[in-house]
Image (tube, rainbow, N blue to C red; front, side, top):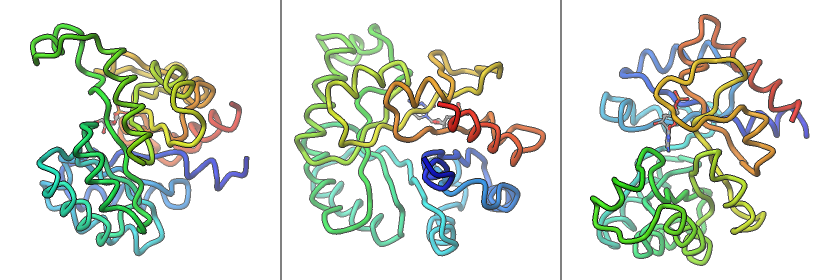
Length: 232
Ligand code: C5P
């Protein structure tokens, strides 16, 4: 795989609370990184204009909004996101929301990613939320529903990646957070994988925030992760 293709598979999470901080990180990372994830923390701190700014600068932006609402509202929301120039966005994997999002993204370059079951939830959380079945079954059912609804990809933990890849086939993107370079701190992530493990298990993209954002030399940290990816 070429360096560029590999670089496009690394998504750096801009988990900071100001636009200025995010811009400084993007400047520091320079051409080492092509794709950034912007979520609640930055969007609700004045970071939304960064989506268009980064897109204009030739970067890919993953706008991680995990949408869920009635179909009409999801559809209109996704239509607006297509106009921002984001490359990817997330919705919760409910059939009505997936159908609405797939319809709204049709003909655009926006890749819709479905979150099957939040990886922070355990079996007890699911039961407390009123679900009768277990996590693995729900993840599998929603993954198949996502594929059948024409959704472009899934967000999943690296621990789920291999089983999901077998289930959904090669076509969909599989975006995995919880990535830690060999020998680094887990933080609050419970199920972690190295970049090489995640790729070997079928991940198409890796989301990495703290191991790069909190590193003393961020560019060096990103390049080291790309090297680990290349070795896979
Ligand atoms: O700092 P770290 O690399 O753990 O950050 C991972 C990023 O991926 C964060 O932005 C986090 O919100 C996001 N994420 C996650 N687990 C999920 C879904 C998203 O860690 N299941």
